[in-house]
Length: 162
Image 1 (tube, rainbow, N blue to C red):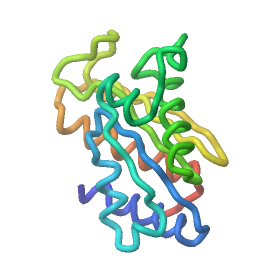
Image 2: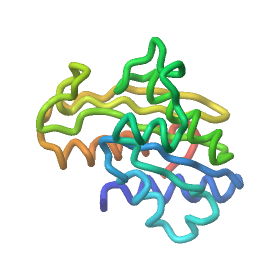
Image 3: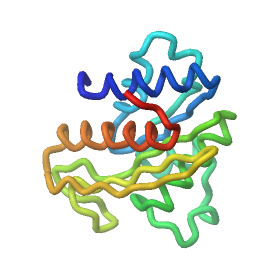
Image 4: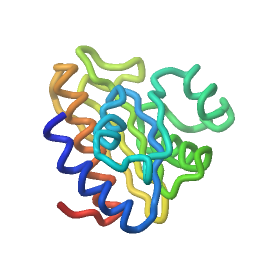
């Protein structure tokens, strides 16, 4: 978590200064992105909420993403991460949505992605997506790497600097 805090602090300062908000949808990071952002004092000014969207049941129940919404989209892909980020942003009325989906390990996911595969996306005034492949089967290290890259991608999108 210590590695994530400087990035989260820069993001928090930027969001507060610009009166912007964020909503998070995480999967394989397991809540680490949200935890990092919430660890910064004053988080209630910018953090509207988030969820660990780890299953299809969570996807449909929390974000009301239907089978029709998923047409042509594979989970753990950049288009999927963008869908999650956009939907979380819409549902909570946030300036920004940030989403992550992947395979932490020690094995790959049922979609054929190896352990260490993660897709991240930011939706808001600017949109970005990124695919990370760590090449590692270490679940905890991958979760940390996914969270760190997610925060870095978000910082880049919003223009936050450390």
